[in-house]
Length: 300
Image (tube, rainbow, N blue to C red; front, side, top):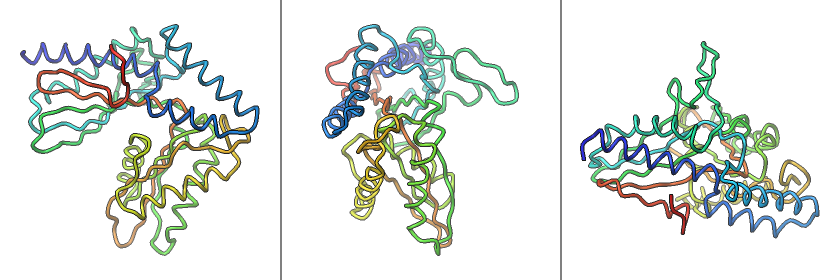
């Protein structure tokens, strides 16, 4: 197929996938919420979780987004260097977002700075947001779709510390982020922690961290231990679903890291909401696709 046909086909598939992902939680997140519901002991926590699941069921039955804030669309892309339609991906995603705003439907959330007017189709200046990673000697396109709602964006932060502040500064920074504006994100959430050398790469790493599939761990044993320790510490705060007293404020804590400068320790924190709407879809060079990584037994 030529590039025009490829763009139209990719846009149509992604429009449908966006419609699916805004209404159905990925399998791993849904299963984790079920697990956490069984761990909670207070009646109010059980009622909240039951309301979550009732809401999710109604979203599927009524074919409506599972949360009224469908956010802004972020796409994290791993694109093979041999994928032949790389040049049309960005245009196709922009078209898919505009069309899904009507067909899903998505709430109109995009406002351009300095114009202060809603664009009415969730596209705008550098929006949808697209982050690229190029995979050498590969011919596949994997797209992670994420709905960045306001509540889970508010707690996001990044800061650079001096090495003399030590790793204790990282711990305190994560706890402050979660216990402060984190409650706006409708717990329980996934906490992404990025460790780098400046605010830019720490912030990006924190996003990559909380988009990882649940149940995965940092590659380094010390990184994996930090994830476990942070999760245990955060869940000892006595905060539960919706910020009310409970046993679990976080589903998981994920850490991603890069090498740092000798003179800096940088940390970024990104927080999801319980409605962790992120889905993975993979294409080959014929634009055949598979999204079973996120949704098994589902079609679009």
